[in-house]
Length: 384
Image (tube, rainbow, N blue to C red; front, side, top):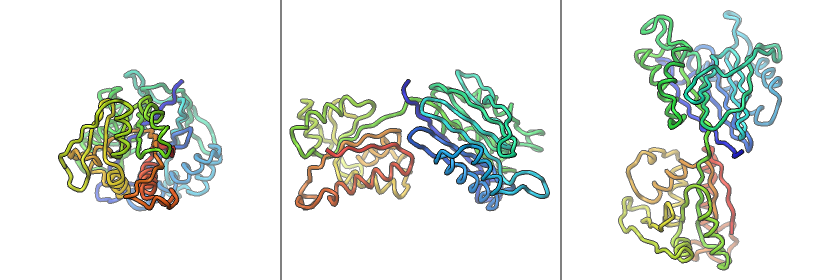
């Protein structure tokens, strides 16, 4: 069975008058699992945010290290005391742990039941009560399939509109009915989460009475991209590398003028250069039949890396057609990125007698890869 990708969408709404949301979400991706922890802190504002953040950080860090669930729950129970007045935990806990083969574990402690969407049908994720470290939890396991979706929400979503537009609040059934209208296989996890929160805000008449969080997880095939940049040291490997690029699954990007000429020569197809400059700071792009994007090398890669590092994500919605914007969009759309980086040094970038480790191109590529990994992309690189 092919490994599945867990696409995660998160949307939140803070209680009226509060700058910070009292709910926290932590997403951790390991080589084998995607771990999502959602916590709703007691109350609202700064105090609730601190409590929920502590809960999600502790749980996700321990689970990432493979620590058993009983130890995770016991640690959280001892770290976060029970409210002496209301006799309830200072924060709730929801854990979703999804393996790449679809094997999924859901843990719910003082939180609404998670929604499972499969083939247009919506049901609670099947769980059973278990006592773990003295706490009563709902724990369930199920093998998810491609196209399945899980949705977890905080209490603020379930209670939307209570005492106002909806006398008893939206309720679990109301949320399920809304999901039935909007959850289709072609919808992204992000769209599902944002639509739920938009409905919450509507039911609260724009004045949320509680913090609201929706987390949607959709299982699908991973979107792949292969980036070839820089010529290899050994020119005899040109043909092998180009064939490897062409046989790779997903989108294909060539970055660098010399690299583009190598690909053009091996493919027997010309490079067509677009001499327009949508952004005067970014060199023009080109095109080769069969390649999704052809850009200039170091300047374009560095522009993308700097935008990612400084979180300039508004470029995603830009209509600009410069090479950096187009490449950034493609990289952010991809889940798994393979980089084929040639070690041949351009004398214009660096003294060719210096080690490759301090070559300018290598520094730019490393910066780009670190930026992509920081936002959760799986990136592999091979220097050739």
